[in-house]
Amino acid sequence: MPNIDMGALVVQVLWAAFSLSLLFGVIAQRTNFCTMGAVADIVNFDDWSRMRMWALAVGVAMLGFNAMVAAGWIDASKTIYASPRLTWLSAVVGGLMFGSGMVLASGCGSKTLVRIGGGNLKSVVVFVVLGLVAFATLKGIIGVARVATVDRLAIELAGGQDLPALAARASGLGKEQAALVLGALLGGGLVTWALHKSEGRNAEVLLGGIGIGAVITAMWWISGCLGHVAEDPNTLQEAFVATNSQRMESLSFVAPIAYTIDWLLFFSDKSKFLTIGIVSTAGVVLGSALSALIGGSFRWEGFAGAEDTANHLVGATLMGVGGVTALGCTVGQGLSGVSTLAIGSFIALASIIAGAVLGLHYQMWRVEHSE
Figure 1 (tube, rainbow, N blue to C red):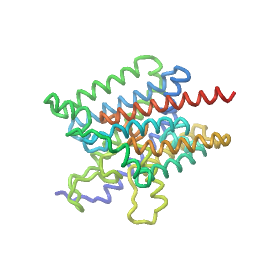
Figure 2 (cartoon, rainbow, N blue to C red):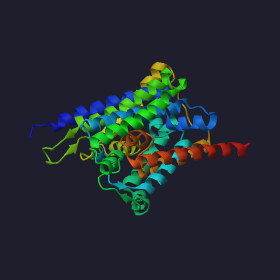
Figure 3 (tube, rainbow, N blue to C red):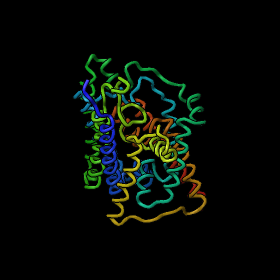
Figure 4 (cartoon, rainbow, N blue to C red):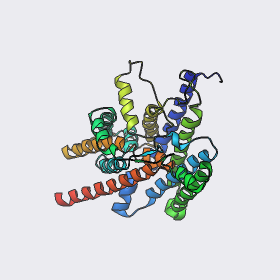
C-alpha cells in the first residue's frame, strides 16, 4: 500500500473545491444563472433563453460525468444519488416543497449565495433560516418525522438506480459502455436542444451553460478521483476525503449550508472539520462578490416590508425541509444528481420544477387579488 499523506491530500482537495466554487460564483453572477429564474422567464414571458442555459449546463455535466464512468475513473454507485434505495415519495414531496420555497425566497440555495455576494441582505436571512431548518431535517426533530413518514416508501433496485446500471443489467452490456451510450444520448440531446435556436448560442448562455456544467464535472473529478483513497491508512477502508456524506460529491447547496452553520457555531470542537460542501459554500459567495464588485453591480438590498419578509422566511423553511428530503436542490439534484442519470434525481428535478410553477402561479394570484 503506498504511503499517503492524508492531511496534505485533504488540503489539496479543499483548495481545489474552493477554487471551482469561486469560479461557479463568478459565472453564476455574471450570467444570472438560476433555475428558478429560468422557469419564471418561461411562465411570465415565454422566454426560454435561461432554460437553454440551464439545459446546456445539465447536458455538459451528463457528458462529463458519464465519460469518466466509461473511462473507469468513477462509479455512480458511490454517490448518494444512485444508491439501490429509491425514495421516490421523498423526492416528490421534497422537490415540491423546495420548488415552491425557492420562488418565495427569490431563488434556490445557490442563488441565495450568489445574491449574498452581490449585497442582498434578504438572502443572508434566507441563508440562516435555510441552514438551521435543513440541519433540523438532517439530524433534528424534522429529521425524525421525515424518516418516519416519506422516507419509508421506497423501491429497492439491486445494483443501483442509475440508468446505466439498469441498462447494463437488462442488456448484458458493461456499465461503462451503458454510461457512454446513455450519457451521449441524453447529454448530447440536451446540448443539441440548447444550441438549436439562436437564443441558446449567445455569449452569456454559452458561458453559463458550458461553464457551470464544466464546474460540476470537475467537482466530480476532484471528489471521485483526486480525493479518492482506495484504502485509508487510518481505517483500512475506501474513502472519499473531505466529504460530509463519506461518498463522492459534487456541488449542492442545502445540506452544505447547514454544515457550514454547524462548523461556524462549533468551530472550537475538534470533531468538526472543513469539507468540500463547506468550502464550496464560501467560495460561491466570494466569487459572486468579486464579480459584482468588479462589474459595478454590488449594492445593498433589504426587505421591502412585512409581507416580503414573511415570504422569504416561509420560502427558506420550505427549501430547508424540501432540499434535505429530496436529497438536493436545483444544483444538488438538478445538476449533480441528474448528471449521474439516477432515477431519483429525475423525479426530484421534475418535482422541483412543478413546485416552482405552482409557486409562480400563486404569486400571480396574490398580485391579482391585491389590486
